Amino acid sequence: MTDDLVRVCLGGVLVAVGGGAGAMLRAAVDERLTRLWGRKLLSLTVINVAGSLVLGLVWAYGASVVTGRGWGAFVAMHLWAVGACGGFTTFSTVMVEVVNAGSAGRGGRALASLAAMLILSIIAFVLGIELGGSAAAH
Image (cartoon, rainbow, N blue to C red; front, side):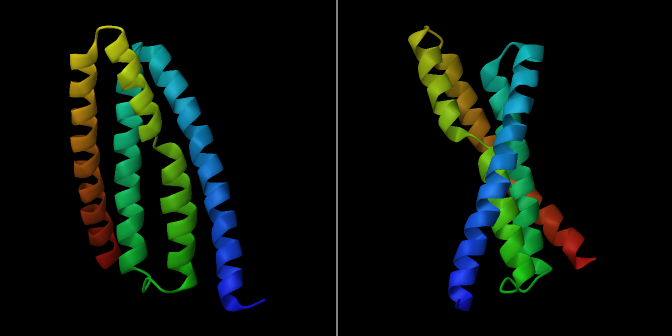
């Protein structure tokens, strides 16, 4: 097997394992928070903001500690960034919830929740990059 084929196969396995674990964790957290708060969009906001923060940390760590070309960065990006964070966050489910809320006459609140989630997720990602870069520098 060539090195490229090994990387493609290993990358696929890492994404699948990380994605499966992230999705299972999201389902458990979402169920728990929705039951606790009774608000699905709030639960999804917490999940997406937390996932964005972790993605920023992993991104910064993978880019600064490892050269970005070694196996450590490859595993970090495929297993954690693409796999686990991709499986944990769920913007597609948010779209379904926003449409459902709009159909139930709560469209304004749903759109405000969506805007807040996007803004907070971007801020969390940038914060993660900053924190991850600072941690890697020490």
